[in-house]
Amino acid sequence: MSMISIQNLTFGYDGSYDNVFENVSFQIDTDWKLGFAGRNGRGKTTFLKLLMGKYEYRGTISSNIDFEYFPFEVNDRTHFAIDTIKEKAHLEDYDYWKIQKELSFLDIDEEVLYRPFNSLSGGEQAKILLVSLFLKENSFLLIDEPTNHLDIKGREIVSNYFKSKKGFILVSHDRNFLDNCIDHILSINKTNIEIQKGNFLSWYENKQRQDNFEMAKNEKLKKDIERLDCSAKQSAGWSNKVEKSKHGTRNSGLRPDRGYIGHKAAKMMKRSKNAEAMKQSAIEEKSNLLKNIESASELKIHFLKHTSTRLLSLKGISLFYGSKEICSNISFEVNQDDRIALYGKNGCGKSTILKFINGNDKIKSTGNFEKVSNLKISYVSQDTSHLTGNLSDFAKSENIDESLFKTILRKLDFSRTQFEKYISDFSGGQKKKVLIAKSLCEQAHLYLWDEPLNFIDILSRIQIEDLILKFKPTILFVEHDKTFSEKIATKILKI
Image (spheres, helix red, strand yellow):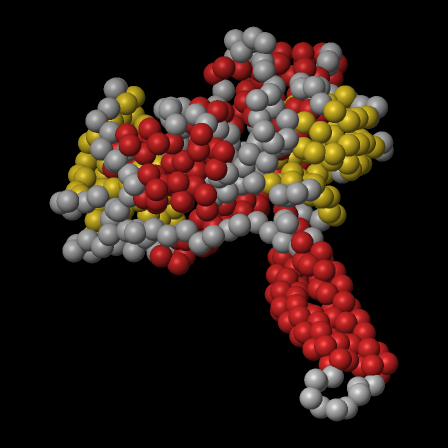
C-alpha cells in the first residue's frame, strides 16, 4: 500500500477562461478500487491524463508507482493478441499460466490469443487490453470507460473481474457495473472534489440527503434574513423616534427626562445592530449552501399518438449488408405505448434492425415487414462521428427549433460557453447529448434509440429515465446499461 498525493492542483486548457481544476488537494490509497463520477465535461479524463503527465499543471502530484491508462494504443494491430499482452506486461513464455488464469476470469477462449488483434471484436479487444494491464506489476491502473464495447453479459463478467482486483481508478457511467466492483468513489462536483468510502449508490444517497438538508437550511435562512431585516429596520425606526422625543414638544410645557429617553433609544439601536449582525451572519451561512446542487431540471418530450394501435411488425425477417447476412428469422411487433429493449450479444444485429426500421436503404431484407402509413420516427444513432459545425448549424440542418434544442442541452448540464464551440470539440458524452436533445425536439410516433447512453454521465441518465417514465413515449431501444433498461422497458426482446 502507498499513497498518491495531489496538492493544490490547478489546470486549465490554453484559451479557456475557466480552469478545469483550481487548488485541488486530496489523497488516494493505491489499494482502493476507486470509482470516478462526475457530469460530462467536468474533467474526469483530463485528471487521468494529468496523472499520466500528459499536460503541464500547477501544484504537485506525487506517488512512487507507475500509472497505466486504459485503453492504450497497440503498436501493431496485426500481431497476435498474445504478443500484445506479453509486450505490455513484460511477460516471458514461462508466464503463460498467468495469462491463462486471467483469460478464465474474463471468459475468453485461449484461441483468441492466436488471432490478430485487429480481427477481434471490440469486447475481445477490451478484455485483452485489461489482461495486459492487470498482469503488469507495480502499476496503478487508470481505466477510462471500459464498457463501451461490452454487452450486458460482458459487463457483468468484466465487473466481477474488477471486483477481484485492486489498485485502480475506474471511469464508468454504468451504475450496476460500478456498484458491483468499487469500494471508494471520487466525485467531481461543481465546486470541489470529494472522496467517500462505498459505491455509487451510497454516494448518491448521501448526496441527496446533503442536498435536501442544504435546500431546507437555505429556505430557513431565507425566512430568517427577511425577519431579521424587518426587525433591524423596525428597531432603528423606533430608536430614531425615541431619540427625537428627547427634545419634547414646543408647546407642551413639560421637560422630558433626556437621560431615560437616551438610554431607551440606545437600547433600541443596539437591538437593531444585533439584528443586522445576525442577518449578515445568516447571509454568509446561506452563501455557503447549494454550491454543489446539481441542476437536474425536468426534461419533456412531445410525442405523437397514431390512430393505429400496431405501428409495425416484422415476420421472419433476415437482414443483409450486401451478401453478408447479419441476422435471420426475426419476428416481433411494436404497438403504441411499448417500450421495448433489444437484448443480444455484440454483433447479433440489434443496431442493424433499428437502421432497417428507420429506412436505411443499404440494408436488404427478406421476410415480411409492415409499417403503418404516415409513421413519424425519431432516430438516435450509436455513431457520433458525423456531427460537425456548431450547435446552431446542427439545429438548422436537422430542421429543429434552435431555442428548444439549446434549452434541453442546458438542462443536460451544458454551460453557455459550450454553445460557442464546435461539436467536434465536445466530449463523447456531450456529443451523445446533442443527439438525445435533437430527438427530444422531434415530434414522433416512435423513437428508435441505439445505445443512447454511451459516455453520458449517470445524473443525466437518471434525468432521461425520469423523462421516459413520466411521459411514456413509444420507444424501441438498444442499451447495455442494465439499470436503465430494467427501469424503463415494458418488454425485453432477445435477438
